[in-house]
Image (cartoon, rainbow, N blue to C red; front, side, top):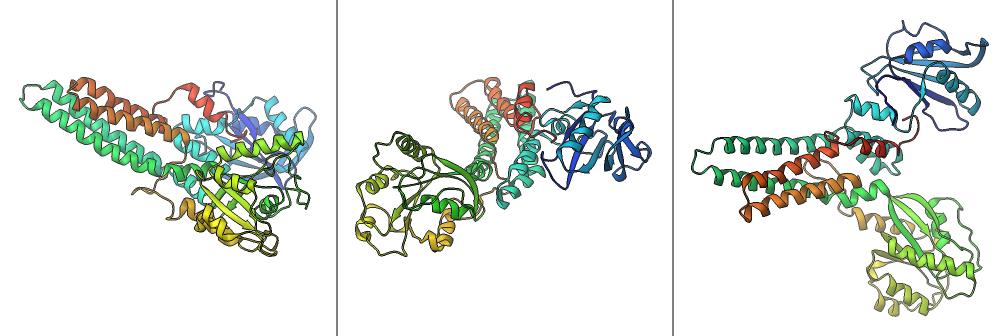
Length: 462
């Protein structure tokens, strides 16, 4: 990212398109003077902080009116970026919004890069790196559960826990240094190694508690990759449409209608599902359909959950049996569909191939059995509720999970080093390494390349 220490940035903070209002945000030392150049109304430099002021935006060059607006003034340091901020609320629409932004850019502001407002909030000490990532998680939250987890992280609960762990490590390292500096006591080395070993074990236990919540946390943050599979015309597209509450997939009685993989997100009892509606799996000579069938088989390998549909009004086929075998080692739910029609499927044969508890009977057309299906999905991943530790913290971020695993490994190296009789100063290196790794979670230690990568994933204007 460009140097953000001195310049003033501006960007549109609302989605592009027609709407009730649009918001153009300006942040930096020159935010008020730049806004005042195009604002006709009160003198923004003299109004109270955190007030909203009626006026018009004009083109200073032609003195023509661009739009009727409200200008919010927020003075540092009590702002999102801890800099002076002006937010211009104009009528929603492409033309007026872009004209106002261009006027601000032509009078001294620079177009903000993706995530640059949040990056300034981090660099100016208002939030740490894990809280900055929680901002994006909150924006992208797909269910109420994922939103609550993001809010928890944004409130700093994870940050406080990580900083406490780092402080515990620092206290141990300080004690080790004291013991090394005063070696005249006979038992000093034994005392030091015991201290390191006990603290490493204690910290490992806390980190493992955090990591225990990671699987659920990743599901809430990224969604559960869910493949809907089955032979042609068993109701896969009908299931997708039912869960989405819209007719996204074409539904006909003609087998092979779905030729490609269709993806979408849906909230099922608080669990975000990334639904993958696949082409019906069967032997085919149609080249295009064959490509879809192959992609369907690949979806089974990459899915977190497989919803395997069978047709209750037809006898089991070799293709059904093959799909049952192919999904035996993955987390799955067998959906016995079309129970409103005459039963032709041999249940005794089916239950000899699958666990009866894994089967949900439905008539998707009549919306029967869908509540039971939703509950089964939720129970599979959150049957005992959301797992958190004593500090009510859940880890959701893949970067955090990776760093916690590395810190756990470093603490394991501490204990192995002590068991192998390594000198204290070498063991101390691994303890220090765990402290540094935990610091990368909150951004207490970081590289500029990491910041650029993280904030480039943010939307423009945030």
